[in-house]
Image 1 (tube, rainbow, N blue to C red):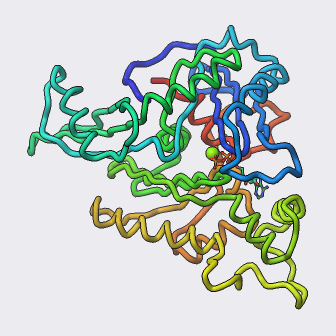
Image 2 (image 1 turned 90 degrees about the vertical axis):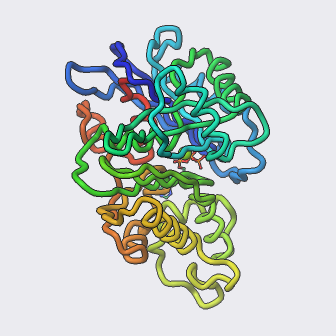
Length: 356
Ligand SMILES: Nc1ncnc2c1ncn2[C@@H]1O[C@H](COP(=O)(O)OP(=O)(O)OP(=O)(O)O)[C@@H](O)[C@H]1O
Ligand SMILES: [Mg+2]
């Protein structure tokens, strides 16, 4: 989580430990920017085996990460800048406004504020913060609070350590998502919405240079799309997953004995509709909270950003221009990777490109 001191390093590794896949990127730092050395995306559930979020064991990550390090020929002892991230229910982020506080009072006062504002329960809270700006006229300061529990952080660092790694920086996923965007900056004025669409979860971040930061999780992702296809087309998990990769939401028309994806039971809204509704609800909340509705673009990242037809669906239903985010915008790429600009790597890149 962010500290405002420039960091010195020659190479960096960003690792995004998702419930479906681990994403690892290895970068070389250049005089101005970064070069991609290598990367890998490795599923944590064997192909054809049903991914059931509630059944997934944390200890499956260690051998997978160790194997990735071997195949990428990265010696874990030689990494001097490793950045990873924690997310989910046990991480909470909020931008608050408080009266000006001198440095020596800041930490204890913010700890108190965080208890008030952030929904972290069951365990000892770990707090990080960043002073974003000072408002001279009102003598207020805008501060970004990030909290998690000691236990959640320990579970995360245990995975890395058991894979032979030494954790250096642990970010909050939502901040890393924003970071990937801010560092790749083609952002102009205005407000951007980033949706990191994973397997069981979508992290929604609202970000802009001069606007309030907002982040929340929507409990839906690629898993729910596969489930929809299983139901609507009466397919097994493996068949539905294959179907999803091939057609996404642009499936050929159905035979008469099956129901269409968008006409599931009334009680069962299709996943794309539920996500669009949640996004719109959050945008309404944001307009009230931040007094800013200058929404420019929705950017899709994560594995499910690749779902065919989703970009078009969201653009039409949320009514904001939508694009699949290219996290390689500002990165020097070797020839062999030129065609592989995968949005699934956004978070790992946002982590590896952290310089302060
Ligand atoms: N080309 C594709 N088309 C459609 N879906 C895809 C494609 N590639 C990957 N996915 C889906 O993306 C999801 C994995 O994405 P990602 O790696 O971002 O998730 P994760 O980080 O492991 O999950 P979470 O963040 O929810 O823990 C899976 O549901 C997978 O089926
Ligand atoms: Mg993820």
